[in-house]
Length: 153
Image (cartoon, rainbow, N blue to C red; front, side):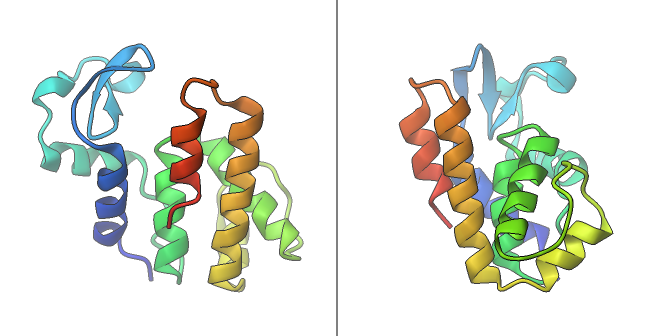
């Protein structure tokens, strides 16, 4: 089964360190000082504290057989609202022939579909779906960076 420690290293490498203006709020290790984390002083946030937040609030992919799929999904999950990230995954699964509903709900049906799909083909299709999502929805000023991140992994 997929391992959080492996996945979080990939995410932290993509997120980087302190950013005083990450879409209108400061962030550190990708944790924005906004919404549920508004009370956290992200400037002093440690790596270990960020990892704990990611594991508690974002890691949902330990049931995946493929580490590569789990890592890619965690990377998307921290960058997009959860339902959007799961819809991207579900659209990729449908494209690969899985008969599931694209509803943004993450549960045993989606996990089973992931685990019975070819991981390499699934990651390729997830990347395509993510690029398509960014092209339609991202702020043009950050689009290039998002597209580069989307095709990694």
